[in-house]
Length: 326
Image (cartoon, rainbow, N blue to C red; front, side, top):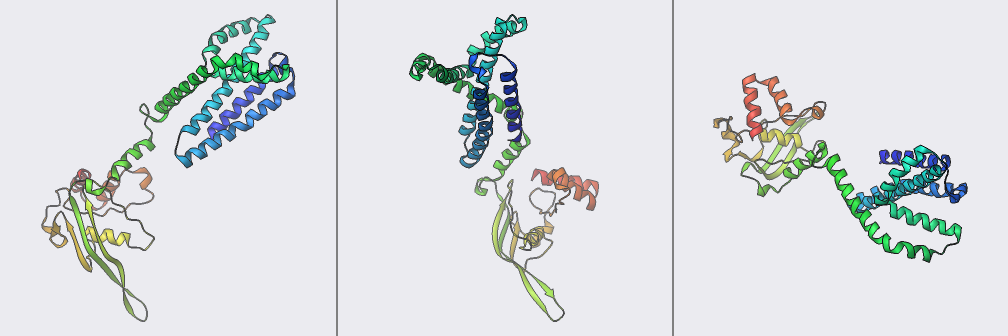
């Protein structure tokens, strides 16, 4: 939004330079009218942009952003038209460069979708100064205005589509779009995934705390029952001290549950030592993530980092490979 507003401000400044520095027809000799006109345009532009972004976020639609784009392109048409008028005046005064520029504008302006909207706007404004009835101006523009406006809308749709493709679509996928693609695959219903690899049934875990006067038992986990499926992601959300780390340690076998069972691939937790841990899905590891490393490491790199600290290089590679396949 900031970039759009800065760009719009530069554009409005350029418009003022064109209006005040280049000669134009008699209508623009009234500088107060010109100043009021472009002040309205300059002040309404940021309002249009802000409103479109806010409403787009609220209603999850691109229609309002498209409408603001069309309004700004109509403003561009007004500027092009003013430049063309100024070039015509300069050409009549014998300026050769203006004549060459005007030749280009004569070919360019009629095919721009912004032109008919700007042309109608100018005619309506001028009618107020010359006393021409608005009905007469509307009669002149009525036949060509509707098809030209429809063409401008269609052209803006094409323009928006090309802009999306180049900036964040097929040609240049952004990191955000890649993350969204991965997230959408990760949040599919667990039942639609493959077989269960962890089954937790009625798990309780209690630990003892001691003070100067007595010793008491605190319950960390209370009757948890759920399943984990292969090729899926399961998240635990809770406040500090709610038992997230305790549960992960129970699942990894670091802590033994006070009550209940944890089964891995149809093998009870107590029998896991007899199962080959090289087979993907038959072992559960616990890899804590460090806040300083998380932004710069992938999950695989993070696992390998801890594996290199506590295992030989061969075991480390095999562990990471198995977990990655899992």
